[in-house]
Length: 257
Ligand SMILES: Nc1ncnc2c1ncn2[C@@H]1O[C@H](COP(=O)(O)OP(=O)(O)O)[C@@H](O)[C@H]1O
Ligand SMILES: [Mg+2]
Image 1 (cartoon, rainbow, N blue to C red):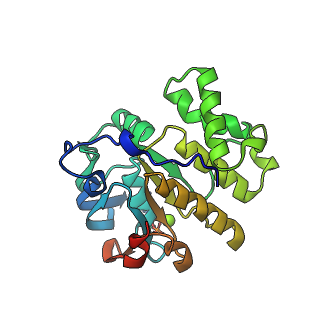
Image 2: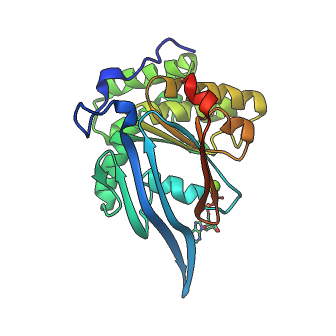
């Protein structure tokens, strides 16, 4: 792994002043989060009151059966969707009632999102895909390319920067997608089944990258239904039918983090 992964160290933005060590600061506070979908007159209750705190630099795996609400919760955490009820405070900001415009701003600065399907634009090169969030952030072109190459190097893909997605393997495309998630230097990386489309060996390579991202000080939350993938995390939260069934810290893993 490139030695590039350094701790974020002093770049932590404190919301509680200097008295609280950064690792004790809650980055995510969810209080009674509910999400309903409306199909005609039918109300589908998907999240039925989720309350939890995720601290800065935690490494969390979200598990649970298909349909239990994992993606719905991740989309709310990632500010891709808003809850029907309850409160979501991210880095001290109440994002539960924000307009789409403000949410987009929060997404751009606080969150990197990685999807199962990579979601890369097929006509763009790896470097152009990675640089795309910087276009929206108004970063000048030269700086965009510099940063894109920098994060591609982080995921050991510097030599593939001019390749398009159909010229790359699944694992390489997921690494491009991870680089894209990192390019804005977000505090929090969210990944919804990032290894769901990959073979076992490639999955482990991807998990090594998430481990390194966590190691440099990022908060990482990922959805998986594979126990051995979840075991890379230090805390496992299990959902069932839209509620938290269990929430356990893995002491041994936490001890050497
Ligand atoms: N846009 C939507 N409209 C209606 N129902 C939805 C929508 N998105 C998800 N659901 C329902 O919400 C439930 C949880 O979905 P999801 O969060 O994707 O679960 P998971 O990721 O755990 O498999 C499912 O029953 C699904 O059918
Ligand atoms: Mg899902």
